[in-house]
Amino acid sequence: MRRVATLLVLAAGCGAPAASTTVTGDAFAFNEGVDARVSGAHVFVLEDPSLEATTDATGHFSIANVPVGSDVTLVLEHDDFIPIQTGTHQVPATGIDRITFQAVRPVIRDALAGLLSLELDPTRCQMVTTVTRVGRSLYDPGAHGEAGVTVTVDPPLPAESGPIYFNSEVLPDRMQTETSDDGGVLFVNVPVGEYTLTAHQEGGTYEPLRMTCTAGRLVNASPPWGLQRL
Image 1 (cartoon, rainbow, N blue to C red):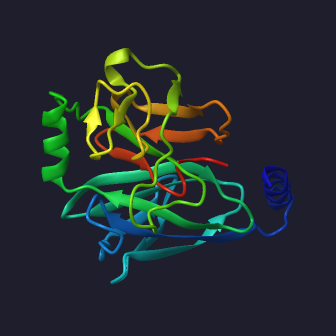
Image 2 (tube, rainbow, N blue to C red):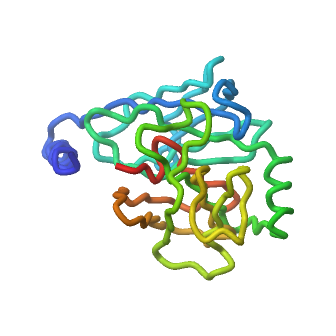
Image 3 (cartoon, helix red, strand yellow):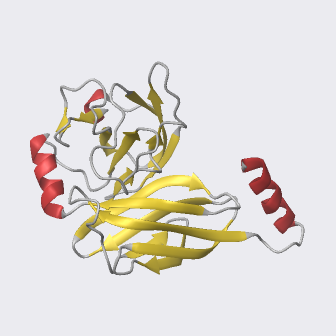
């Protein structure tokens, strides 16, 4: 698929019209249930902010005219939630569907930071994703995670930054050494830059995940576009 996308981009450089497609998805309110959606949020592409949309009453958004083969990182802004963005994905000719946000309210962010005795650095970002079982996503009720998985990041980060795994109560727990059935994993106060997260599990296969760390934002690659088991 990436080879096809690259050929289309090269063709555009030779005078052919650039191929474009659509990116769609939904904004959920973190830990408030499968039906808790975020309406009226501004969603845009980090790499090209002119590509934008507003979530409707059901939290759904659709962004057209996204170049095939380009990298896309989506950003969500809403007065009731902290700034959040997705992972970074190369856009195939078929587009991207069901890319999701788990929008976090400031009170929840502050509570989780307090639980970890963490002072958030505004010049850095917080990165989180879900290691997800086959066939599960935010659109399904209940836990989504694949337990027993470890996650590494490249370039490496100091131990105090993580990984910090979420326990079955959906709380970050520095005592956990691998994912629970929640699947969540967190890296804190990450320097601005580009990172690749990789999941490790005997007998399990996961595609590596790219993240673009932007100062002051929560970067959350959530199901089904996180560390999804193949």
